[in-house]
Image (tube, rainbow, N blue to C red; front, side, top):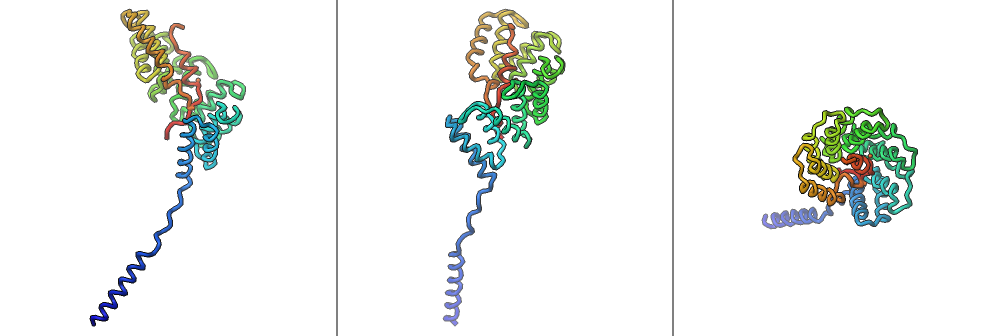
Length: 279
């Protein structure tokens, strides 16, 4: 009986040992989307290191798997001639692909190309259509651009009240230039009653959000005593802040459309091609 028990224990031990010795399941292959994101991350690193040739190749690899951010970067690189010859037709083709897949920033960039006539004939009405499509996707920059179109009468009849509506939408989305533009509208009485105090309040919001133009306009109010007591020292401080903040102004990022400054924001913040937002 003891011999039988020993034999049974030995058999169980061998069985357990064999079970432990069985090879584990082979590693699961990386999902295509995950692999695409890995390539994209590397491509962005190369781009930020100014290794544009290598970045272009990596973005093309990621874009082949329908990665929207990669398509956006390719559009920017062809538009800017980074790692390749400048080719607006190629840029527009990549932005179109991303826009067709629902990318709001791509739609906005297409609007900018038509607004500025980059590789195409300037068509403000078509630019406005793309800005509206992008705004419908929640893009604050596009909302600002729609406001500029109504303010300046480009692609639509000039309508200051409608411009204010769109500037407010963009401001609600955190767009610093839109905050500045609302201040200008209050100061000039365009679509809003003249109100220097409200103008200052909106300039301050824009300045807090990083708009160098809003900082400059605060300086103008202090210099002229509009809505505040005249204070040349404060004015000079704000002019200096504006100058120092020019390079840091988020309105002037490439993501790659008088006495008071307003056009500066519309030309720089609204109408620079942008990099895709972090998803």
